[in-house]
Length: 520
Image 1 (cartoon, rainbow, N blue to C red):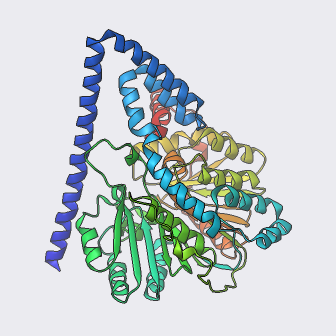
Image 2 (image 1 turned 90 degrees about the horizontal axis):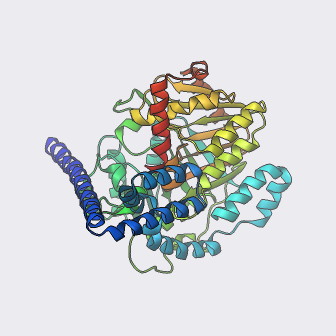
Image 3 (image 1 turned 90 degrees about the vertical axis):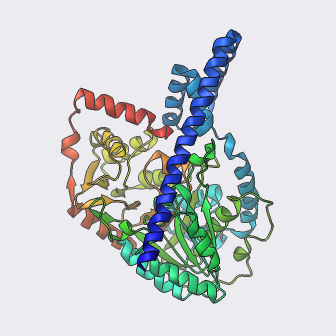
């Protein structure tokens, strides 16, 4: 056992070394390209004219794109101020051209989903009759993101990640056909150990097991030997968008989803990854608060579709028909007695539809009595700031809960820079005193809630692959409200502290951070 732990630490140390070497290699390549462009510009004066034209054309092109203004403004400023460096950085991490191939693969599978994921018209008619406003939200996700709304799905809410883990282990032991898992961060240590043993056992019994993790998210915890170990146990294992020592602009878009699907009838998702800190085995930032949900029934079909789309479209190769076989109508789903309406959904940076942001905006705009929000990071678009403050000024109880102990101090400064415009618009701000609040969820009017992986920041809403579950009139919604009330009781309200302007130097620092935060 001691030898295994030493080898594990050695492998992870190698993985971190790989990350450092890759980062150095990329920086070196950027510097070489930059120096070449500058040198060419000096020795061929006519190239300066072309560069000016390219700079202006790029700036005009960015401004004409159908993107959030907070994204466009910093790129335009950087390109006009530093043409060579600005253009180079934009081509690396700002342009969508590098995602073209992956977009094509996703488009093929999307066309299959049109057939495999139809909305039950009777369900939609029933919802429209019960609550037209809720039906509008459901219609948006169904028509623009291809995720139907379902009846007859049981939902269990977990107020702690450890509760979700216990339920997952139990459900995994009962798997008979397949297990699909997709996580941003996986740490091969104490919390994950019992899960890994179950996965190996199930694979040996003939259960199809697929395991998918993000390379950047797990690079502190895993090395490439992890994939070999899993595959030797009969588990199909892949890392998403691996870090490589060459300029690869798509590297900026990460798989931030967190889900487990078992036999197509049981699904889990929420804010927690599979690493020790999420279960308070370690405490790098005080007490770690995280939440999740378990869904059982027809709505799990949407989670299955989300996983299969990502699994198949993320890797080069010929697009093969039939890879979405687990969604075929011939695959039966057991009848459930779940009350309310359940609508799993996902978002991708490969299209122009900002699904996660629109779900949040719809909840805010529809709120009549209250809307409470939990997010670890608060980096807001003008649209969300306006929606939150307008709702609060109309008399809606709008509250935002953020961490009391940050995991990234610079991002924490950006988060706090948004407090002043919010509190001036009557929004109440709470910081979770015991530690790091990582839960990502909304609850409104005791009727609507969403739990998932979307942070309330630019990376989650525009750059990452994310997922969530929208809940309408489900029995678990009062439990979510009660959990919010407990978190508010454990938090410090800082609203009054941000009614005044900060000191000049701090305002300048925060202004710069806010300006360029959407780029990275």
